[in-house]
Amino acid sequence: MVTRYLNDEAIYIVGAGAQTPVGRSALAAAAAVRCGISVYAEHPFMIDKHGEPMVVARADWLGETAPLVDRIVKLAVDAAAEALYPLGELNAAMLRETRVHFALSAENLPDPSQQREVVDRFAAEAGVTAGGHIEVFSEGHAGGLLALESAVNELRSRQAPVCLVGAADSWLDPERLEAIDFAGRLHSVNYSWGFTPGEGAGFCLVATGAMARRLNVQPLAEVLTVATAQETKLMGTQTVCLGEGLTAAFQRVLDPRHRVAHSYCNFNGETYRADEYGLTICRTSECFEDAGSFTAAAECWGDVGAASGVLALTLPLAAWSRGYSKGPVNLAWSSSAHAPLRAAVLLRESALGTN
Image (tube, rainbow, N blue to C red; front, side, top):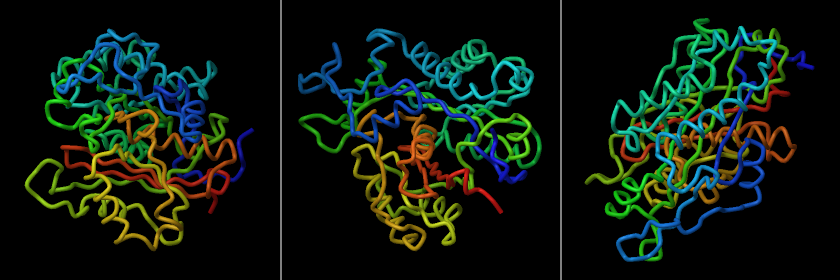
């Protein structure tokens, strides 16, 4: 039964799905992260430049030799199916009108033909081809939240009745693993400040309160604000990180009236991200109940690239649905690596999303 306290003009998340190495649904993945369960393990056959087995977080049901495009498509299709479940068979017509905002990685899929293959196969297998509109974003780790921002703008301008937002990525192509290792970014016994490659996909179904009532679905959370910004002092360049881009993204979504109880980020072991967050918090601490209260899921499922932002926002949805959240307002944010995009989204428990 849908709550009667919906704001018709507000934006709600009404469905969510996740595929990660620690769980094949949003609730399972969130439970594993909450318990600190990690699937870091030696890769079956990849060896780093020091002669040690590479440690990765792998979705082992996909098979160790599955091609990169196949991995990403499978992860995306399964996560999208979970997110679309609330529509059900009775709302099949709505599925045909659903606009899709899909984030991929230009770093892991540098060839545009690869991205097009992923999109085409995803559309066919997920059953969203009839709508004929899939907008693709390739802006790194924060691309999924850029996709969410685009979807929210469409809903508010009434360009679409409901939007499917998602992202999928994998670092586990052998050539990509070798490139990460060669660049000195691979976490290992010989290098402590790298990241552990992972893979995954996250999707969410977003709609206005009026549409949620029409569809008779129970919202999982209200999207209070989502915003993006650009960073000029990027990781790996001869500049000093000041966290200016992330600060701008935070300032555009934070509100002292809705203090953040807990945040979800894409810390992955690289020092740049910790410096960036620390400097950002110095400028925005008044909007947090406890700025040190955060979850870095990469400790469990590895760095999931372009899927980082959307997967991060599925975690508070699970916490609210299972009653273990630390508060009614949570923040999810993501910072791209060598791309300038920074993004954040402020979420509120839907039961409290009233005027």
